[in-house]
Image (cartoon, rainbow, N blue to C red):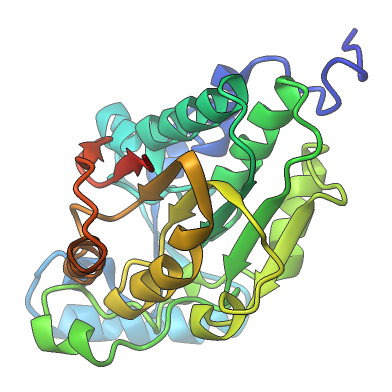
Length: 287
């Protein structure tokens, strides 16, 4: 029986929780839902009458709460690297980036680094659910978790994101838009929702400048785009405590994100090396 005073979440095995959050224990989680945004177009396939027909059918079925599922074999290596998006589950960041969250949190706990934890771009909330479980398992019950998101998907690209090109336009993909109420319900399902889980709803340029956050120990940016990443950097990096961590989810895989990070580092003379997490993410510890 779990001692609630020692572990209020009731989650005793973080490794098992990681498997659940990434849906790695279900082979069917690799199946793909055809959405109004066609993933095969993202991969560079040419437009054809088949793509057009799939989109038309998918949009029609959605009106009746139905969808088209493409069966795909489960690939553990892809899931570990966050290279596929689970049909169900709570995060798409993969095993290695969850392990990175655990490493950063356990380091700031052991080193006594003060500050809250924030993620900009939370999807279904899985990464911050894992962060909350790590904190509670270590008895760190006072540190706040901030979930910043539009809770309606990505904004349409503009400015430098359009200029540099190369990143897919995902603003129309309903799969990425998860309501705040659904994210809160996900936290609650695992006993992780309490008064220290906070939500910042809206576009980052509106919510982050006046966010009631004094200090940050771990900031995790998952905005994909140049503007979203720069908004987060400008408003959050100065608040990160010395010895805290900045995690960039898509540093290696989104051109706009990488450009924003590189420009910000150059402007502020940040020369701490970026450590790579997997094929997508990177992070560094603030001196």
